[in-house]
Image (tube, rainbow, N blue to C red; front, side, top):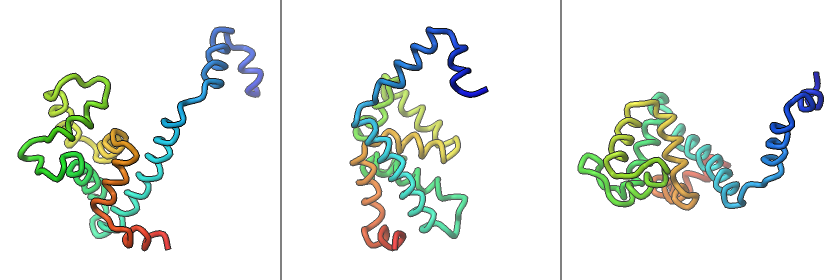
Length: 147
C-alpha cells in the first residue's frame, strides 16, 4: 500500500487534523531555537568529548556539571541555588514553586546524564547556550576542532 491509499482510508476528521497541522507553520523564533539547540549541543558534545577523551564515560556528566555551574552563576550548588537557576527552571510550565525545582534538579542528577543534559540545554535560550560554551571554552579551542 502506498501513502495516498492509506490516507484515503482514514476518517475525514483525522485527515482534516493532518491538513490543519501540516499547513500551520511554526513561529520563526521556535524554529531558530531548535536549530540553535541542535547546533550548539553538537558543538558542546564535540568539545567535551575532546576535553575528556581520557574518561569518555564521564563526558555527559562534565557537560551537565558545567551547565549547572552556568545556570547557578558559578555559585557552588552545595550552598544552594541563585535566582538565575530558579528562573531558568521556571521555564518548565509544570513548575509552580522553588521546592519543586529543588526536587526535580536532584532527581535529574540521579538519572542518565544524557537526558539531564538534553533537558537543561533545552531550557537555555540560544544566547545562554552560546554564553555557557564561551564560559568554558575559548575561541581558539573551538576553531581547533573545525580546522
